[in-house]
Length: 399
Image (tube, rainbow, N blue to C red):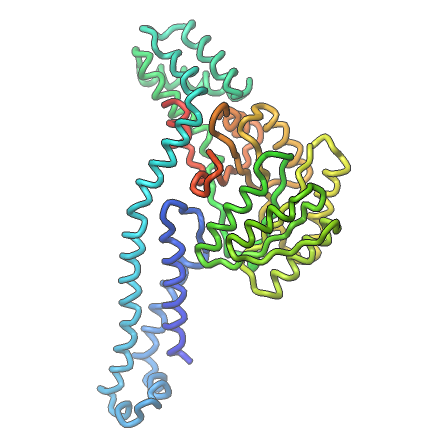
């Protein structure tokens, strides 16, 4: 029995290394992976103290295990964890292409935020730092949907930084603003953890047209590529072709889907979570119908879906995500408030940060309703959905 422990530990470390080696999409991780190395040394310590343990493991060659020196060929397999370090270097080398992929994505993010960034950075083309500069910057930030509270906070923080740095060049103020913005956005920077619960139930909500179902499809793709068992719940039973759209993603990613034509959304969600538990799935993604926060009866239905999911699994839903359109400006903040009051959101996905999007709304969210932003999207392609990084976003906005 002890001999099985190294193998289990090795399998665990291999699985963990496979997850850590995600190129360019580094959010997927199982929290138990870090404990696997601790389990590996423990069995290594037992063979010296318990000589009888190798003896049962040695029935394969009873004659050779009788001598105690020959019993040490059994520890020779224990260097089998040594190959696992060999897999770790491959894990370290695998992310090597990630910077190039990340750079390409950052270029697309900068391109998407260029309109907003240009209106802000033109403020720093003057020759001196004075009240006129701060007034222009205040107007530019408000036009970028940063909001009054976040704009006031940023200006006060910026003035303090300029004073401490004794800056005299407007160009230097731009860098200090990027630092202030990054610090404001940092509380939104958090990773989505999959694997703490089996299955991890993720409920996704949003208004019509925000890119909710497409974002679910992209997440499904990344999860499936990493070997996670995913089950989709088509709880959007109102919108025409909603089930078909989610079904296309399910077929494309070869994952299972639970759906009912014209069925009750809460019932579909309950069946999906129950099926996910029975089939040993890693993740259950529940796609709910798009709705406006002003539609009270539909918001109450969302609350019902959440309650019914909890009946299927007392710990679920483990994540409640809201997908918001980056083009909607301050309306996105209103959506966050309403959905958070109704569902107690755990994370956000901000989509369509390309074209005319004004990225300042993230500053408003950070100031007034700091809910973690797990992902941001800059297009329709699979690689256009990435993890949120406060420093990268601030630099892209002010590039």
